[in-house]
Image 1 (tube, rainbow, N blue to C red):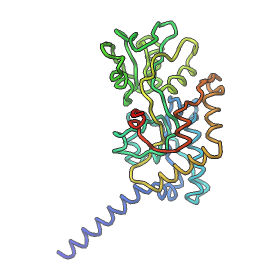
Image 2 (image 1 turned 90 degrees about the vertical axis):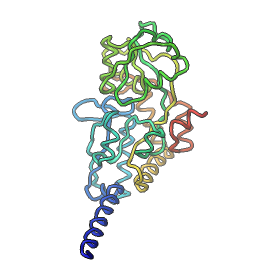
Image 3 (image 1 turned 120 degrees about the vertical axis):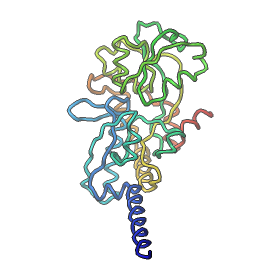
Image 4 (image 1 turned 135 degrees about the vertical axis):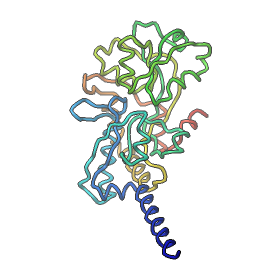
Length: 299
């Protein structure tokens, strides 16, 4: 019996050590020499330009975070493994260890905080809708009888339905598997509007065959803090991410990145998104915090 107890105790200790390792991402990164970075391929804050190249405001910010992780881990030779994630799989891939953290276009909200943690907010998003310039759609009320696209795994259409001006509006919901697919629904005429984060809409319009054919229209449906996502109960990793982001804010490098990706011509079509920094984003940078979306709704 005593032997069985000792075996069980040893197994428990091993399991505990495994859990501790899973919750110490910095130790995992230091040991492997690799950062598994979750990136998006068609988001406004991160996207691909082909050939395995991932770019964008959040992607480049994440690469600078990795530069700081080299100092934190004492490993100057850390490599980045770019792992494409989607709205549907980003949380499971984080939880099962496939990615170490992600800097895509994930909204920090109370529901997600039950499963994951967030670094300090780096972009405050406004959810709106993209339509064809000749559609005549200028407001939520114009969506009656229309088809509205959004991306599987996001909350944008639910947000639209909850908006006070959507009362009595009857529209059909069509789903894209990712943001590029959702924009294709609009582009091909299978949807009359694409409801999503403004930066995502602007980036997909800029990358389209004819950007002038589209406009971002209608009321602001919600204001959402966007942040890098990491595993829950991993204080060392959170501190490392927060410290890097705060450093980038303080030394002005994050501001230069914002100007590069939102105010200057960007690949692949050399079109500017022309999106000046919002007052909400300025406030989030002035006082770095990881407040969820629900706190913004109280204002």
